[in-house]
Length: 310
Length: 310
Image 1 (cartoon, rainbow over the protein chains, first blue to last red):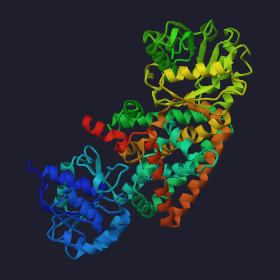
Image 2 (tube, rainbow over the protein chains, first blue to last red):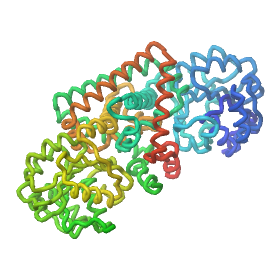
Image 3 (cartoon, rainbow over the protein chains, first blue to last red):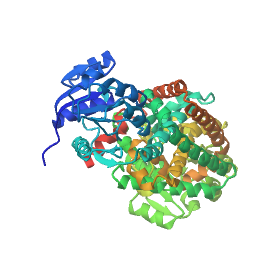
């Protein structure tokens, strides 16, 4: 099987995802040349210092000229603007994709702007860390992680196959999904957890009877597990909230109902109901470990690392 | 400084904490002999197979005879019963302590049962993993972790110093706190996070539009961080809820208010409020890492581990 290869790949945005793409594309030799575009001159300079691409520009419209593959990696609220900027310069037959965490909104923003002569195939690599920016990326970010493509009904089969092969060459496992279903699945597996994490860290910071230094000092008893998600990129997450509103509100509603019921069990001392919930949830983690999506070392394997350090 | 040493230590309960204590006591040579007691004959047999102690019994009352230090490591709801069982056989001047996650309730249950001739000093090592039972323990569990002692006003200074030295010899850093303040601090850093984690995993399991296999498959995008806490021991956590009810309900109330406000910001598209919250919470994690309570490797250092496996 011949390896997937594009003459020219344009990466719009060079944060955690964009810069990781640049690194894996280079490592795997997936492009003749890589153009990197970002609107911040400072970030662009850093990308150049890191040697992430072959050419660099702050003009998105410039970057896409002659590109065979364009990947937009910006906060989802900026997708429409980027589509407007690049639309006029796209090469006929180019594949245009993105990495946004919400899909219906990205499609609504980008599709009307893009010419029919290009293949627009939205995508979302389920990969990330709590760090952001071009320095945070690494070539292995996508290894064994899922990438969900949400092709539109009239998608070109050859272009879809090519984009699929690209993500597989980056190390991903590729799935396809309806955009609406994607947004619902991600609302539960990603958006709700992030919001809950942000919320609990916010609640803890606000307490007056317990000091912030106590929260930090004793965080290992549970709290710190939430702080990883709660230190994710604020701009990205603001945009996710604003662009997957309905699914997120639905999940928050369900979560709150369940929490009210749990609260009631505690107030009325219903030990059986508590025991039942706490038992049921145990099985889910076992499933995640068995699916190879988690390490089974106790405490995320942190214990050893921290003890060593101390 | 001479090393702390007890002629005979009785461990009541041999789960994650009790069995880790047995291991570290043996490794550090802190006792002439270790008696292990647990009401389950099966668990006791396992403890014996693992060689955790010097003698074994299912009778708590038997275990404490002649012991200089007794450590009760059972779900907090059983503290009162254990105190009743051991009270008559305790040696004059023995130190009696525990490891329970709630302190006011444990004091209320145990203190009235215990004779004035012993030194009752409640304690709580902030150490644990999501695994339970005698096989889950390990000697390094307490290394560099906090142990909070909540001595009563009339505590004997020499006994307190001895118990402090014991925990330090186990690797812990020891703090003292008022029992009520302990319960409030733990409600926010430990009890609330666990309940929120149990709740979100419960909510996700109940969804009918998103299947459980999808939740598991795509869990790496955030959800799985919660599943570690949500796979903790159900009996222990049921008892924590029932025994620190007021502080937990107070924290759940605050969390719910904050969540309702976050929900409102999303519904009304208040991007500035979202951005402000998501920025504020970032600093907390930095504080935890700087305090040496967390590893700063991205994704808990999991990325590398899982990639290697796959």
